[in-house]
Image (cartoon, rainbow, N blue to C red; front, side, top):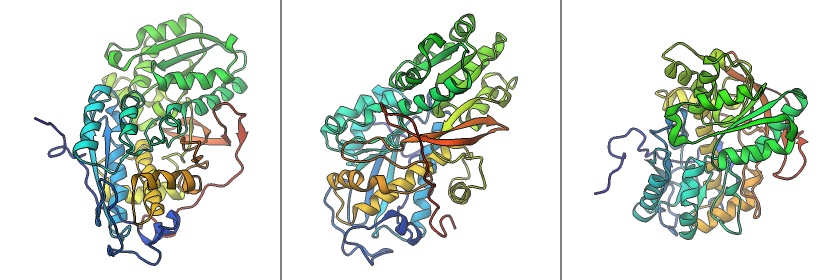
Length: 445
């Protein structure tokens, strides 16, 4: 008998998606729907599984429980808040969206089962923002064999951009190699002569990040490389942090999920080890990590352990309330998602949903899976949103955001400063001179 969180879990998400007039300008032409808005469905055709004249069904697997749940379980509700907002203001050619979210517990074997159900039983039009590197790698061949768009995967693995082998897969966030290069460049420039240690998840997430770091950090500076497995996190990271201390690492670069970030910092503090931390954006969200630090230590430690850590961002800091995107997203959050905390995961979920709205609008009335992919390859690089850098989508590039800005953890938030950098996996790091886009007039109101 099939089991599902759908009937009882609050993250069994179904929300109407419609393009408000203020979003229509940002989403571009909708191919055959010019002059049409609201609930006019007379021109809609159903040309793909998961699409009717009035609905579009998307699906995702998310870690609603398990080692990656802290923080990440907030993403799908945040995306749904944007969908609800858009629905309340009009329509994308009269169609609404059903968003089916299944709990995979960050376990690839469960991801495989749930993904098959979403595609073969629920007949989803596309997978939207499924989360995790090991989990989505486990299903990438199957999803592509079924020719289902695997869109905006919540992971920065370089593996999402293999259009010859996996033409239906697309990333969204800055990939880990690029992030590692930018963080590595910062380490090389600001901590020259210091001993550097790595702590990273022992899969493509951590390995890609280390590839980027190694392109910039001098090999002679790296004195220890420590790994962990998510299945053994409950044992803590005491051995790894002790090894880094014994090696004399003065700077510790981490590619860790939030729970691992907190466990590493607590283990280090317990042995009197206080290196300079440089942390991947994945595991550096201050509200999320602060809660975990307090929970794991039973209130004995908190956000003070994060103070001064270096990270990087491709979105404006969620603590920058003066940013127009953050301000508008917070308005939507307060109305449609106030039961969840406001943090970087919430901002992420809203931002990636905004991109999905752009794509659906640009793909037009006659929605097909192939048409959705072709639209993203042809127009995705022109999509605007809250990102600090442009998207890189094309027929040969399925990555997403192509750069980041360095930030520092301070006062419970992240302060981004200095130049914004863009690069490719193998190319030089360059300074980006463009200006971020502004939200459409009235967005969030």
